[in-house]
Amino acid sequence: MGPPPGPARRADGSPGPDGGESSGPDGGGTGGFEGGTAGPSEAAPSPSASSPAAAKAEIFGGGREVFPDRRMVALYGTPGNPSLGVLGEQGPAESVRRVKDLAAQYQPYSEEQVIPAFEVITTVASSEPGPDGDYSAKVAPEDLEPLLKEARENGVYVVLDFQPGLESFPDQVARYADQLKDPNVGVGLDPEWRLAPGQVPLQQIGTVSAAEINETLDDVAALTAEEGLPQKLVVLHQFTHSMITERETLDVSHPELALTLHADGHGSPDLKTETWNALQEGLPEGIAMSWKNFYDEDTPMLTPEQTYAVQPKPWVVTYQ
Image (cartoon, rainbow, N blue to C red; front, top):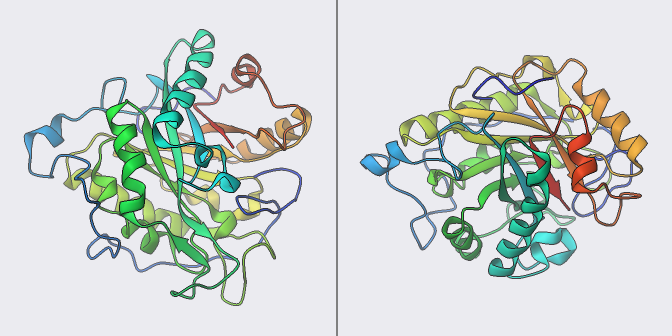
């Protein structure tokens, strides 16, 4: 699989607070970004829709299309919670230094520029139903803002990652519409944590329909177009085929979006490669492939050189 044409979990079965493995249900959303409930962050993250600056905004590294002119290396997690990933192990400024150093280690092995990124768990799967009854804890926009501000000021792309529980992906993403008006903020969808009625996290692996993902893509593409923003990265997490039903019907037609399938397998290099190859079977053309390295679960974790030796070369590499 070559470079994506312009716009466009793990493997061993062990569940955990930030990822697991196997199969499970699906659901639909109500769609649309009007009336998102999260509200704007305290510091406006980006130019307004009507401003000339919005139409001229570029992705970090230059240009208005994500691929094929750049690759990304990202830290995964949520602010202030080290148990959910390496992004929570230090404050925003130190996270910037850490991810920039990591991205620099990849540059010698890439003809394309390698830019740093954060994948921020924005809604976190929870063992308790919570006030909304959906088993998904929402990070308040004001709690995201210190990290978003640090990223914005230092050329670090941000992906807001969603673990929706019983709520639909379109409804969850709509809560953060104001944050998505930033030209360097994209979306991550994690079907592992998409539950059917009667299910709770960690008892099974979630499943989402391609139809629900497509509804989310429609909404994000519409927001991007309305705001005059550059293309947005959309990360689809997967480690078994059952996590996304009717995957062949995923809509890859939105020029406003760059889609990547993020292979979330952990374990031995052979096991990760097996998952990597299996996930490419039947994948719609135009969806880029991306890879995750696990500090604790991989045995051993690949070096930057080894990671970029994977074929096809991953467009986004995330560290958890």
